Length: 260
Image (cartoon, rainbow, N blue to C red; front, side):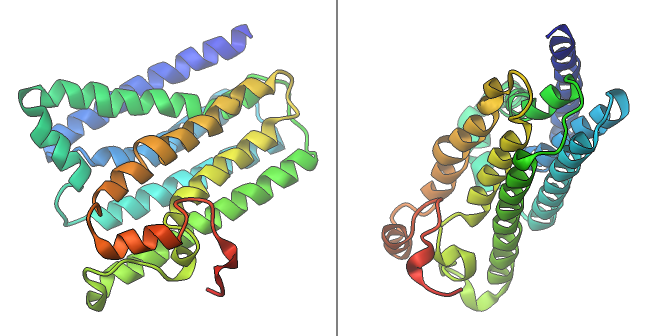
């Protein structure tokens, strides 16, 4: 337990420095949506630290690899999506609403809060790093299958949407094909499933049940806070989206709707 507490403290300090550095960069670039790029990279940074500083096992390497693959792909995708465009509408709204308090609220409510949630969500990997070597089991394979399913939904969903958006003929339309036919947010659904898969992989560890806080937190954030609600608010009053909302679930895919 002492080792786990010490590891949490070290990673918390690392994330504090990391978040502060990105806040400074955001001021220079005048873009708070850099926080979205920093999100996935932060997980990769923690995995790199754990790989270098902590004893490793094959399952630990698997977990670090899965999180780095997810984090790097997500950050690269968001960077390429936002490059050359205005700041994301959600951050623009905060910039206008916060007025004179913009800087300190950005630091606390965007960057440090993000670092706090990152620390909670990556807790299964910290438990693995501070525990005796975790061996392979049925939990490893089931969790890996869950993670792979989630990664498919997120990566393919993001790709399908990017292709749709780049087609000028689709301007003003709502994406409703491919994976988006079965769920309004296949990318968000995928992210949730990936973290539940990681939780399943670490279940054999003694005292692992408390790290259920990780998938519960990411599920709560996506479903009720910064994911689905904030994005869908953009489409309030759009009749096409309202029809889409009635026929298609927000997250869990309605797979009986037909072929891709």
